[in-house]
Length: 117
Image 1 (tube, one colour):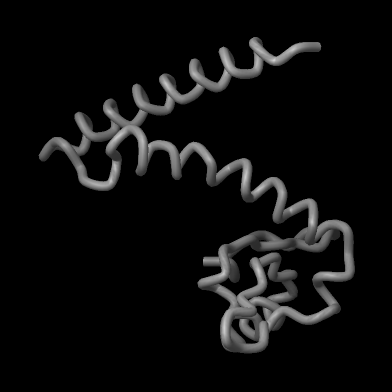
Image 2 (cartoon, rainbow, N blue to C red; image 1 turned 30 degrees about the horizontal axis):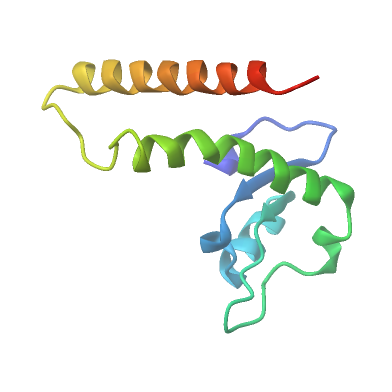
């Protein structure tokens, strides 16, 4: 899918969690001319992401933004009970997901509003 992207002058990046920190994935992405911004997996092994990527400020920024993006999905899975689909129809599951995302946004807005300035 990455190979179908149109060419640009700017360097492209692809983000992923530490499950994508494999030598084959990193090599394939670099071969396409895309910088892999995956989280380093250093648990019991060496990471496939080396200093070429991690030394740049864009990698740290990408990891911070990725965490912010994953927070609502984690909340939906743990708090809102989104691990299993509730309905058979795709439209009903989509409606449930959109409603749950709206509830998360309301909770987040109230939490942001309650913080002292």
